Length: 102
Image (cartoon, rainbow, N blue to C red; front, side):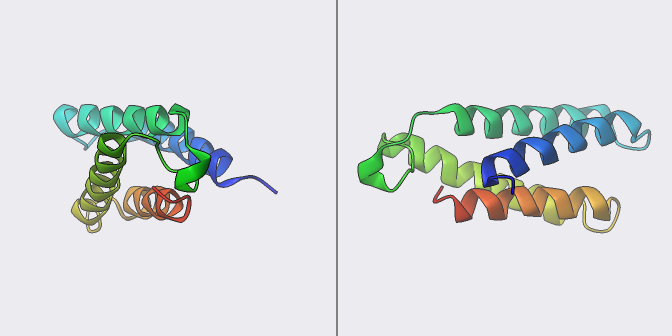
């Protein structure tokens, strides 16, 4: 069974493929999403502290991660009507990060 991290990585890979297929998505939105995906990957690569339950060890990193989860949620809501599959996947990534303690 895949771990949450593996599920997030697989979902991000699928989202990046779908972004390439979305002709109606404006270039600015596409680049914002790609940057967001990069931030998620960087968050997953950040060392965690066992004392903090696996969350980022630095308080400012935890705040940044919380903001990242918020931006994922905002993006999911933004695309609900126009790109429901994209919206659902973004929401899933935000949920997984939350479940991982971010």
